[in-house]
Image (cartoon, rainbow, N blue to C red):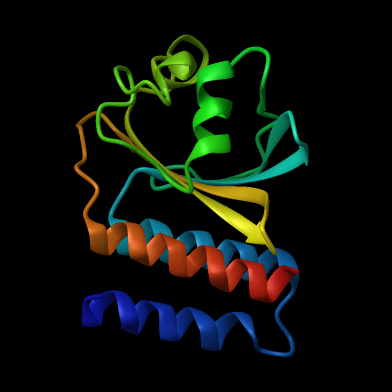
Amino acid sequence: MTSQFSAELDQLHSAIYQPDISEDEARQQLLQCCLDGLQIQQVGLWQFVDHDLLRCQLLLDKDNGFSQEALLVDRWSFPGYFAALDQKKIIRAVDALKDPATKDLAELFLKPFNIKSLLDVPIYHGDKATGIICCEQTAVIKRWTEEEVAFVEALADIYRSRFS
């Protein structure tokens, strides 16, 4: 991992374990670190409500800041996406409209929000996925590098250790 990513992770780790920081502020710091590190348009923190339903807990957009969107993704409406989550640790969709793992999201999420590329990294508690860090690039396609994937995996590990 590059020294830039390592330095950002070190700063985040120091910030979110301060005794006076709230859980909400710590989550915001984590998403801000992801957005800044990857230089993407937006990043979201999604939690599994149950095995068949994901809910957006917090969303950070580069231009619009933080929001708590009432977005839900369910297994019945998006079977290909959930199948990919069930089979893979990470979804790395360079062209999200064409990728088999993410193309079911096209009409309700990708096209309306102009999302071109998607990187979803699960957050695990033990061997069970409890949530996802969802990185989104709009307007242009982004080719996710191995270092970027490792960076978001490290963020997911920090999230797990801080909030579990």
